[in-house]
Length: 145
Image (tube, rainbow, N blue to C red; front, side, top):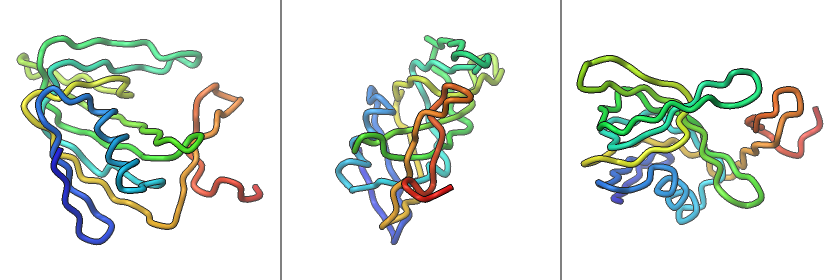
């Protein structure tokens, strides 16, 4: 992975075969990112699994044919001292139809270009929300409600 930054904005280039979530987690750990926003990403996935939340759990939709990434965005938070990556996206297949939703897994094909905005000095949390059974973004962990 290549990375460069200007202030709080980073541009990352992930390479063929890299696991998207592992690469973003490694980036966050190595650069000390405890709060961030994935502004966008473009490239290609050789395989990906999207999920649709049915109110109780994610219903997975697995893609095993390479798809072009037309949208990728999300957040970087911290859970138990480790990066927590939450991504949504949309991809287009060879038939030009879009598939999207909550991204559960993805493997880069050829390359993936990602822009991340970081918030130095901040930590975003992701505690488990009892109402929905999902980890919810907390912009000010430890603050009184």
